[in-house]
Length: 52
Image (cartoon, rainbow, N blue to C red):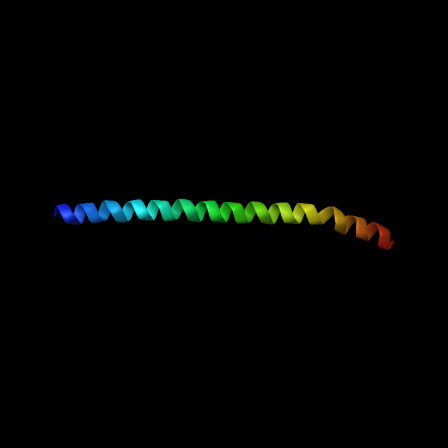
């Protein structure tokens, strides 16, 4: 019973660490996408103005 409890606690710890890493990775990906889109948008607007 004690081994099962220890194993459960250890798995829970690893699951929490994996969840935090996944949350960090997704947040970084979304932030990178937003930055990339914002950095690209003025160039598209400038290109549209020069095309006219």
